[in-house]
Each structure stands twice: as structure tokens, then as C-alpha cells.
Length: 147
Image (cartoon, rainbow, N blue to C red; front, side, top):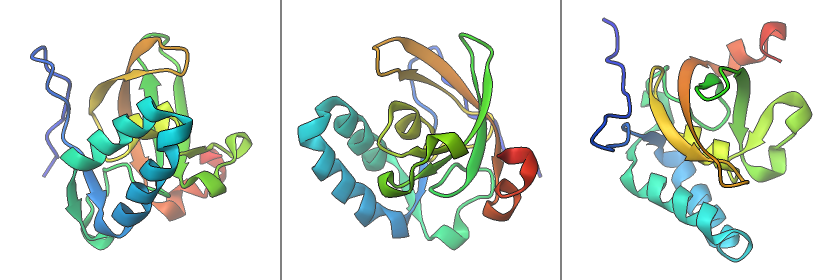
């Protein structure tokens, strides 16, 4: 059965967020560390964590963006599509598409399901809309077509 598509409604409601309970402690620790460097970003991540439904990683739906799962998204302002993998900061490598969860796009993507659209703010303060097009399992994401 197809999953319902989550979208940003005109009412301003944000799409549902789901995250793995195993990542929760690390994410909360990152928020604490980021508070001094980038309080706005830390606050956004804390907000996403706070509203997330938590599940064991093994029970996370396959179509939900999570740490280590590659995702293809579209920037609705530019039409540009990009495939990235959200990771913890020490594992980030932009040249390989491994983006830190402590970036505006990392915070925006985490926990969203395929089809979800969300407003996000770039580092320069520009407000944009992104849409999650596809989420890949870790093994799929390692294939040459997703690098």
C-alpha cells in the first residue's frame, strides 16, 4: 500500500517527523554543543527532535530520511535536485555528499518521508521549499549512481 504524501499545508503545519530512538541521545548532545556556535540552528534541530515521533531504527519506515540514509531532494525555488546522506558532523564530507546533521539542510531533511515538502532557511537567511523525492537504504546509497 502506498504511503500518504506529507506536504506543507497552507495552514503552516509542518510535515510529520520520525526519527530513530538510537540517534536521539547523540542528536540532543549535538544540540547542546551547537548552542554556542549557532544557536538558531541548534534551536531548529531541537524543535525537530521535540516534535519527532521516535521509533527503534529497525522499525523506521524505509521512506523516511535518517542518519546514514541517502535522500534525493528538490529545491523548489531552483528546481535543482541533489542526493545527499545526512551524517553526524565528524562523518561529514561534502565532496561525497555526506552532509552534517548540523547544517540547515540536514536539520530540514531529517525525519521527513518521501513526498514531504518543507520550508527551510539557508545559511544566508533565504527561505526555500524542499521536497523529498526518494530515500535510499544504506546499501542502495552506496551504489555508483548515488555518489
